[in-house]
Amino acid sequence: MSVTVRVPAKVNVQLAVGAARPDGFHELANVFLAVGLYDEVTATPSPDGLRVTCEGPDAAQVPLDRTNLAARAALALAERYGRTPDVHLHIAKDIPVAGGMAGGSADGAGALLACDALWGTGASREELLDICADLGSDVPFSLVGGAALGTGRGERLTGLEVGGAFHWVFATATRGLSTPAVFREFDRLAEGRDIPEPTASRPVLDALAEGDPDALAAAVTNDLQPAALSLFPDLSATLAAGREAGALAALVSGSGPTTAFLARDGETAEKIAEALRPTPACRTARTATGPVPGATVL
Image (cartoon, rainbow, N blue to C red; front, side):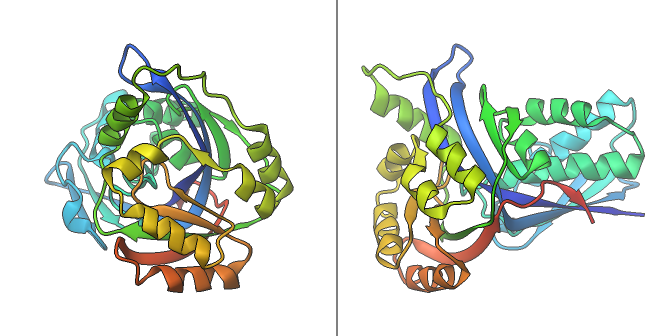
């Protein structure tokens, strides 16, 4: 018997970042939108104990030991229910690695749901979300999907209404960026400045609720973008190329280095993707729509 779970990537249509907290995290107002690029996590009983394998683009960059969020999710669920984590987790990866689209978090949420189904633990949604929050700031949203406002360090979620589908292009970069490194650069760039308390943007929330791409394009923001561009300046040319190709908005996705481009429709999205592929810092460009559901057993 095996269980396969499909989990989407995310884009942040707003990422407001507050000052560093005593625990090293930052207060966030984080508006997530799940988009149709997916990893799949398959859980199968394993006589050899816990093991992780991975295939797909950038699979060589994925850790296969117990630092992997999928492995940590299985261990956390097993510990909570007093069982041994005898499971093989296989990740079919299609979300960019170290790309600011929550690929690792998606794998954690996918493994958690897959192991819950495989072992028949019967964990409640609240229990699964509690484990997700312990695993990482983006993991709860990977489980929930759709659209949500994340507060705290991003793990406290409030679901949001979305009035229609939004068309996106995602340009994966020629190298990754470490999320902790981007936050450290954010702190360096912000040194000596007063950083306001992060709050959700009413124009962003209204644009999502109305399904209005023009209004959303005018409202999207990412406070981590200057830090990501400081560490990876070539991304500026990718952003400019997307705008020139007709994107309504261009921004770094989360901590980067994936760049996200909002398009008016699917046809325009394909044209933007084609224009982006030759740019120096772009490895490939993909189209996707959102919102889509979170972690789902197939």
